[in-house]
Length: 338
Image (cartoon, rainbow, N blue to C red):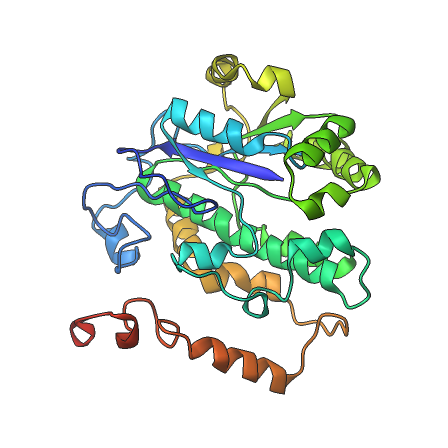
């Protein structure tokens, strides 16, 4: 799993509910925030809006990676606090509910037909549940990474995320889904041995997490060390720590300050490429299009009638019939003036 960090925030956000990204406030400008009703566009660019003008020393994206229960969230939050960066907690299956600030999380029927408890209890379920979970989480994390990039490009204040990285279809989705993104500037990997991870899960994990096998955890570790880290080292800085080393946050910060950040595609960007990237990441439908490659897979495909039933049931909930801010039944006002 991965957590990411982005640049300094101007004011400390209030503590959000668990799993919800904190939002930073900033003085008004030309469409500078994804939370404002007006989106950034060509007019803003023509009027002088430039991402590079806002970038500072830590206008960067850092990710913190590691196995289950390895302390990623704690370290990412500490780094964010020390460097004044914005922190994005791990995107779970309810990420879109949390971003929408729903008080009640939607049923799993509206969130990929999946849940972690079922996955850990029966990972080889023949109905395709494990794949649905993996694909849904990947889509949410792609969406979250686009939110982090949008935040960086609009405010120059950085973020933090988690990623868990199959079948051919999943690999195809993964390759296409992240092809338009720039990689993180820094990847921090927490190397916690599998026996220690199991011990932590037994002590503090959810009941269903205590059933996770050593072989599953070892597969995650091997994927990081044999594939993910070597690939990321080509474009991103890499720092690696044991659990005890990660406790010394000041040393981690010192190591970060010594990095030169002198490689990767970020160095090749200019205001024109940042402009196009910003247009792309603010279009969430476009961001998610690549993770919905049309392919008939019986285990995960639902029929048209069932899809329509779920779709219209979803639209019937308060605030879901129209775009946010345009639903009178949800308390939105002055709709006719928007």
